[in-house]
Length: 255
Image 1 (cartoon, rainbow, N blue to C red):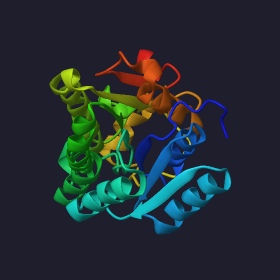
Image 2: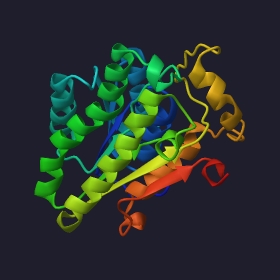
Image 3: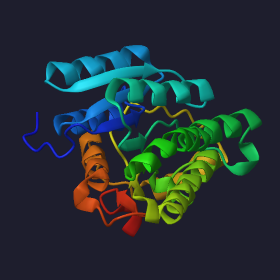
C-alpha cells in the first residue's frame, strides 16, 4: 500500500470498479487511505476487488447492480453512507463500447443502451450523491470520458454522442457548483488495456471509415496510468482544477 495517505477517512465511490480502469482506480484510492465503495454489475469482479483491497490493509465494500436503474443508484449511495459516513469523491467510470456504427446503422436499442449506461447512469448517480457533498461543503466528482469525447473519429455514433455528453455534464457541474466546494473533472483515455468488449462488423461504414484514424492510437496505456490521473484530479493537489477534460492518451489528441 502507498505510504502517502492523502485520502485517509474519505469515502470514494468508483463505478465499473470490478475490472479495468475502475479496478485500478479503486485500488489506488484505497492505497491512499480511502474507504472505497466498489460498484459493478459483475458481483464476482466486485467481490474480488474488495478482497484485494482488504488483504492489502484497506477498507472497501461491494455494491452490485446496473447503475442505469435508479434503485441501484440509491443502493450505492445508501451503502456508502451507512458504511463510511460520507461521500467525498465520486468516480463515474462504468461504461460500455458500441459497435462502431455510423448514424444510419445505429439501432434504437443500441442508441438507447449506450446513452442510458454511458450518460444517464453517471447523471443519476451524480444527482444522488450531490446533496451529501453539498451538505459537507466539499466534494470531487470525476468522469471517465474518452478520446471519443474530443473528436468524431474514435468510436461509433452512439458512444461518441454519449461521451460528448459526459464532457458537457462535467463542465456544467463545474460551473453550477463552483461556489459550493464541489469540483468536477474528467479524463479522456486513449487506447487502454482493459476488458471492455467491442463487437463491430468490419464491412460496415463505421469501422471502414474509422480504420485510418485509429492508426494514430499509439501504445495502449495500462489501466493504472488512467487511475493515477483520476486520483490526482480528485486530490487536494488539484484543488483549483475544475471543469477540465484531461486527455490521457499518449498524445493521440494532438495528432
